[in-house]
Amino acid sequence: MFRWMRVLVLVLGAASLAGCGPRGDATRPVPTAFVPAKQAAQRLVVVLPGRGDDLAGLRDSGIVQAIQDVWPDADVELAAVTLDYYMQGSAIPRLHDEVIGPARKRGYRQIWLSGASMGGMGALLYDGQYPREIDGLVLLAPFLGEDGILDEVRAAGGLSQWNPGPHQALSDNTWQRELWRHIKDLSNDPASAQRVWLAYGDQDSLGPAITMMVPALPADHVRVRPGGHRWTVWTPAMGELLQAASGK
Image 1: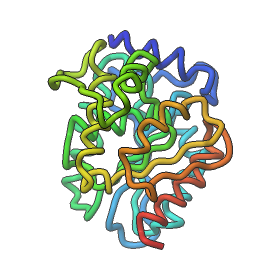
Image 2 (image 1 turned 90 degrees about the horizontal axis):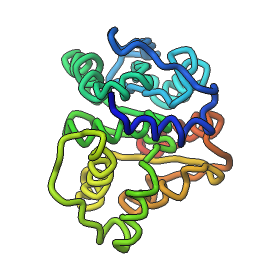
Image 3 (image 1 turned 90 degrees about the vertical axis):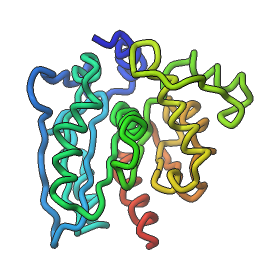
Image 4 (image 1 turned 180 degrees about the horizontal axis):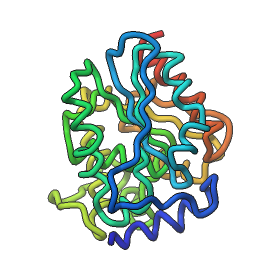
């Protein structure tokens, strides 16, 4: 089990919209719900849950309608990569093997990955571990680690000055560094950063960490909306970001 996920439980517990939140059963396939496009599908958007969400929570968030109102040619797949998958250490490869990989074989023109809070963290980790698999990322108030790594980046003078050291496999001791390494890689690769869109609330408890990521992205790829760490902020932000991504 990844002991580091206990940090996630503690940090996001207060922000969770459903108390302790769903755990899931990591011995079984990742639960998914597929919502077909309103017209001939050209792309797929995969959505990962926050700490307090399961498939029902994702449906109730309104995120599917927000996506398909802007992109009627998008199939949406809700993928309940819940806490137990992360605790087992299998979340990222399972997301690849059971969701993204099979979707790629279906021949979509584009595959986008989105996640809120814990799911935003998962989306970033996936993009770092499986480069060039995802055509676009929409990150909704992603959890970006605990104070130790954040203080280290700040003490170095910010992301541009921070040295993450050599690449390491994801583990209890390395996942936060590898997460921030990927963010730094984005800051050094404008073409890759163009694929990434970010939104969060101006009262979000994770805001100080998220603002450290903002310089890695194009300024017009970031939205700050009124509110805290909840879907009432993220769902309308999704529509805004997809409109911007479409040049509307």
